[in-house]
Image (cartoon, rainbow, N blue to C red; front, side, top):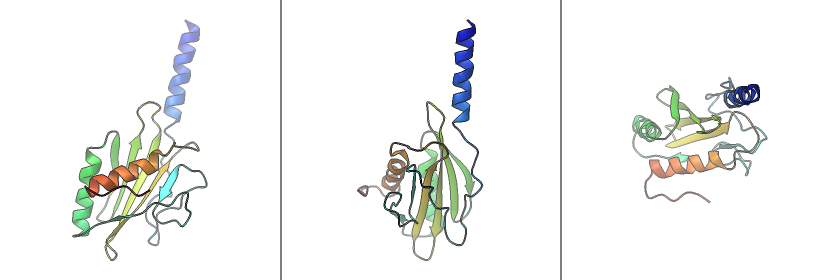
Length: 151
C-alpha cells in the first residue's frame, strides 16, 4: 500500500514538474522573437541555423485579419491556450496530453512585409521528437488551406 502511494506521489511530482515555469524572455524585442536554445526542441522563423529554421507564414489582407485567423485556428487546437494577444503579437501554450509538457508558441505580425514570424519551443527537456516543427506546419496548413508543408 505504501509503495503504491509512493508511486502515485512520484508520478504526480513528475507530471507537474514537466510544465516548467513560463519563460521571462518571451515577446518581441527590437523586432525579434527570442532566439532558440542550443537544444533541438525549438523552431523559429528568425534564425539562420538550419536545425531550428522554419519558414514564416505569409498573409494577405490586414494584420488584424491575420491575427483573427490565427486566433480562430488556435481556438480549435487541442490543449492550446492563448496567454497573450495584442494587435501584432500572440503567445500560446500547448500542453501535451500525457505528461503535461508545455510548449510556448509565439507569433509576431510584421505588417510591412506581410509576414507572421514565429517561434515554438519546449520549456523543458532536450528532444521534442519534432513536435514543435510538426505543430507549426499543421498551423501553416490550417491558416492557408491547400498549402503544402515545407520539407
